[in-house]
Length: 143
Image (cartoon, rainbow, N blue to C red; front, side, top):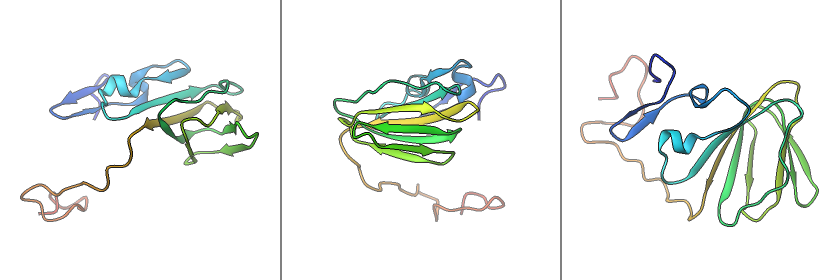
């Protein structure tokens, strides 16, 4: 949980915070840097209504866009356009030209993850002493 001041809290092997703790102006919120993420790129993009970016592409990283808030139009190099609302997802290959525009009447928030190198597979493990990876609110860790 973020500290009482709404900032970033880091512990042994973790960091927690909120987008609000990363800034209050439109533009990029540097999630990777502030939470010390090392294995993939991750940012949030806050767009006022009617604001977007020009076409861009990447040399190596595939990107996944998640629309947290608002309505965002994606336009791709082939001329296709797609409007996504809250919960919308777009996966884009590195060399594919893309641009975004907030086409809604309110602020839009887009969460962006980028990486290269491939999926490592499902490598989640249950620590010693735990019996399951699922628990209920009234249980004590599934023991």
